[in-house]
Image (cartoon, rainbow, N blue to C red; front, side):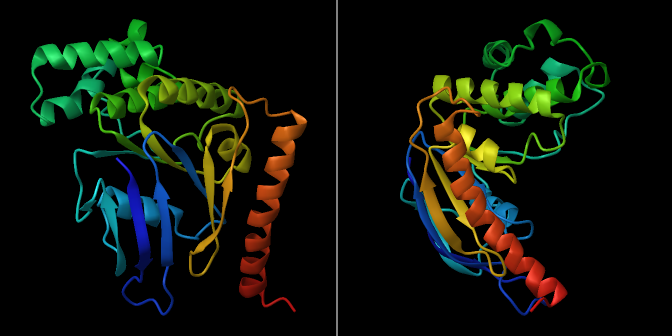
Length: 257
């Protein structure tokens, strides 16, 4: 189910400059794509447009040959905030979306068990949300997203609010889950290290307006070792590209000469 993004632009009302301008790239079935770039370059805006939660003011997007004009069951979004319901326990939160989708109780049970075991939370299925850690809450949100069984998973900085140790574990967990499920993943991140660890390709956006600055292929064997010479070389190359964009933003904001 390839995703084609064709000359997508977004101009918000009252703004003199587009947030996104002529974004074009294709995502192949089963790929893990990370979207990186400086703050404010439109990464989350692009993800919202792909999700159908926002509309482009120019260009179009097609998924499996069908134009995206709104939300659909073929896409699911996992946001930075887990957005779990505190009055429900872990398994009830995981089942919530499936209930709305009209799945049978047997199917809800089967999927909830499968994915809670996959994220290592089956033993915590009856815990309330306030009784589990931040990392476990994000794993609950991930299980809920996976249960909807959409082929395209959109993730907007889902680990950024967590501590480093938890982030490292969740990255490894996500990589294993991606390999096991074969889903296509678009993952927005500020962390170049995270992008190099997870991605097949990294799309770096420039700033003001957000354009495709460069697309990097990450041809490293998995699982990746973050302190290997090969990993560090790719990380440095991509970080240099992102930092050049950050410097441009600083020059504009502070009128450097």
